[in-house]
Each structure stands twice: as structure tokens, then as C-alpha cells.
Length: 462
Ligand code: FRU
Image: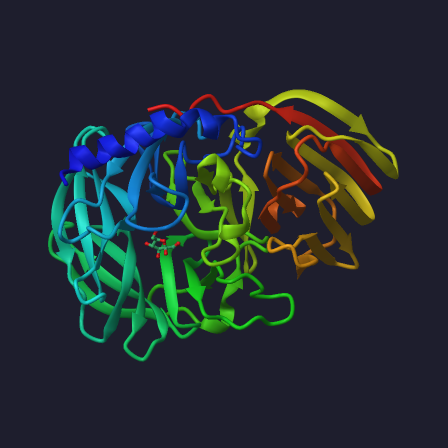
């Protein structure tokens, strides 16, 4: 099938189901979610020619995984996103089972994308190709074919190229699995984005596969990746797969003992970062988890599933990466609905809201929508919700880096993002409370402000 036919079919799905999706009770007001079908990883996040571009892994035809498209969105303010439909469709011999994750850079004024062409061949085996695309205008996308074939020593679990430039050199990290079934990140470099040289393994050794690597500099060099196959250890690694970072040194290496999870919630995976024109390192993640209970989400009946996290600004404090909601998110505040300082507060929380707890002295207990609760006590934070598969309760927890002073929560119909102590500790999770439930209970010595947040203005049209 030609690319145009495939893209048209994807667009027709939006026409067919768009209204059903829009009216879905759990559809977010201000987070990025698909107009129909399934969304997963953020891809190609870039600030280019004064506009923010974001792509994502998109399955338009059903709410499961499969031969992914890249959907394309743009924004002037990182709050309101305009949806432009499919940028890439899986129409070539080298990507026919999916245009898998990748990244964007600018070269000579053009937008250049790198992604993984995923192929399941006639023998049921996987092949993977790192592919290149150019776009002179951010509207049309021309596939330029395969840039990198699978090198020796790795299985075809070799994907998700992230490209950046340092000095006169281009670099690419790729998530991979060695033939000994060890997860790793490999490094390539290039003088011109045309010819690529394999430079070796940058880091390895946690689990059996590392997906979606990223590299950037804060105070130290940061390697971000999503390892699969880690054993649960007390409060750590309780999700099906993890996403985290190692702060190390590009020349001297990255030690897996220094790996830390980025987010402690139930749903957070495959994040990607970019540096914007203001020099901010901004991250956005998939608020989902592969093989982690997606089948139980109640949104399938409405023909959509999954959403992104909010974009967050990164900084480094000691050996912690701090994630702070972008200052732009304050534009979402439509009206203040609560301003109180009582030890025990009970009231209504809008389905789309920001809740700010400041001047905290001592322990805090929050219960929202009779569904999810956060308890912060004795230097620990514990998040509890009904188990997705209906078997009792499930929890995630972590030790706080510093004494509790502030909790900021973003609620959006079926999601919650919790930023503790200015983003030192973060929990991202989907929530599926009863439809009209508004109950909020907050206990603690603190001052409380709640805003109702507006819808983002783009997002659902082509
Ligand atoms: C991570 C991931 C990537 C892959 C993409 C496919 O969620 O498995 O490794 O490129 O999703 O949609």
C-alpha cells in the first residue's frame, strides 16, 4: 500500500471515531492523547524554527500495538498542541512492521528525523534498520532509507536512535541487546549525518534490553534509558519495566550501580528530552507501561488508549535529576477554587485541576476521588490505588531526598502527576475513578490552593 493511502486510512479512522473519543469520560483536557487508537512513546521532540514539534508512536486502527505510525503535533507554548495527522506510515520494506521510535535534529535549516524501521520477516524473525527522513518545512516528510544496519554482536532488538550534536560531530545512541541477552546502549558518530561509525557500547548490564536511550548534559553527563528485565527490589523497580538515568561521564563511562528511577508512579515509560531555544532541558514521557495492565484500561471501548505526561524542565541537584512542571503550565489555571489552611480539608476537586500544598509541616495524607491516595510520612511517600486487574490494591513508594515542604498535583480526568519538593520526587499514574466522583480529602499542617485548569486548545483535529 502506498504511503498516501495508509495515511488517508489513518485520517479516516479519526473521522470515524473522533467524536466517540472526544466524548469519552476519561479523555484528558490538557494532556496529549491520541485522536483515535493507541499512543505510546514520544518521538522527535524538538524546538525548530521557533515552534515546538512532537511526534509519537501511533496505532490509529485499534487500541493495541502493531505497525506504528508517527503522529505529528506542533505548539507555540508547550501547552496547546495542534495535531497534524500522520508524519510517517509503515509503508517501506525496511519499516513495514512499524516506524518505531526515534528523534529529530536540525541540519542546514531542515528537520531531520531518525527512527527504527521494524520488520517481522516471512520466517517470523525480527529485523531492524535505523532510518533517516528529511523535512524542509515540517509539513512534508521524505524518507531517505536505511542509514545503519544491524552490527555484529547484537540481536535485532536494536532500536530507538537519539541523535545530538557536540562541537562538529553528530552522535547517536541506540537501545540494544547483546547476543548474550544483555541490555545496553551503543554509540555511533558521524561528521555529516550521512556516514555513521560504530563506536562501541556506552553502557550495559542491567536487564536484558534497554529501550529509548537519550544523552544530555546537566551538571554531569546523563544517560537516560528504559531497561527491561530488572528484578523488583523493595520499593524499587516495581513496574513491569523501568525508566531511569545514570549520571556519569561521556569519556569515562556510566556505572550501572548509579542507575536511578526517574518517576515512581505506576505509568511512566520511554521518555525523551530536548533542549529548547531558551536552553532548557525538557522531558516528556509516555504515561503508560507496555505489558503492564493496558488491557484493563476502561478506555478501549471509546477507541483510544494512553496519554503523555506533561512536559517538565530538568535540573540536577546532587545525584538527583529534578523534574519541574514547565512554568508555561501556569497558563492552564482558569480559576482558583480553593485557598485554605486547615489541618483537615474536605471538598470538591475538579476533574481537571492543579492542587498545591505548601508550607508543609509534618505528615500529609491525600485521598482523591475515593480512588487514589498519597501518604507522606517519616521521609517516605506511598501511592496506592485499586489494582488494574481488580485484585485488591497496588502501591508504589520511595524515600524522599529532603524533608517534605511542598506537593504539587496535576489531575486530568484519568491521570495524576505528583511533584514533591519542587520535583525531586515524582509519581505519574493513570486513575479511573467513578465518573462523577469529585471527593478530595487532605490532612496535614499546610496551606492549600486548588485551581481548575482549562482545556488545551488543539490536539484532536487534523
Ligand atoms: C518502547 C518501544 C520502543 C519501540 C516502540 C514501538 O515503548 O517498545 O522500543 O521503538 O516502543 O512502538
